[in-house]
Amino acid sequence: MRRHSEEFGSWVRGVKGRDSLRAADLKTGVSYTTISNMELGKVPEMETVVKFAVGYQQDVNAALELAGYDPLPTHATDPDTAADQLLDALDREELTYEPVWEGITADAYLGAEEMSDNDRRRVQAAMRRVLEADKRRRERGKG
Image (cartoon, rainbow, N blue to C red; front, side, top):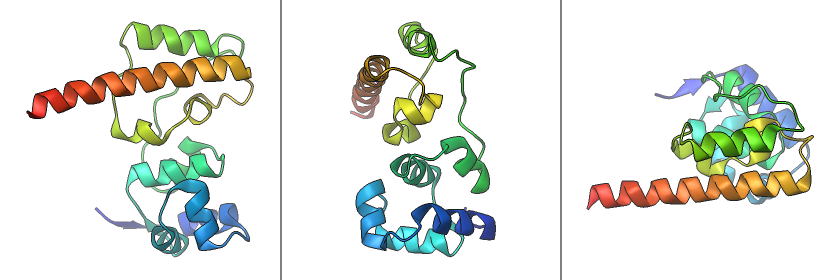
């Protein structure tokens, strides 16, 4: 389903600012043609919105809502315990794979700007382990 949103297009233009389309492509991993379409208000797949927001260090859920998507689940966290809470949830397998997570960092998922660098690295490493294990499980299921 293709959507159009002038508000989303305006947000993309504002976030991109004076960056060229190629610079925005390099910063976000979103193709410059897709970014050009986004500036015109064309809403891409959810994963692309996330990649763009993460690349520009924007609030992922705010970007998703502007694009007409439901926000990602978040956890009410105290910055001092956010890493431990996410690691605990990963250990209990309460969090499951979603393709969009591949482009999300712990910063974007938790709004973890207040997390220490060490906690951020721990969470990102744990997320990578979960994603890799789930990807292997999905690939075995296809064979």
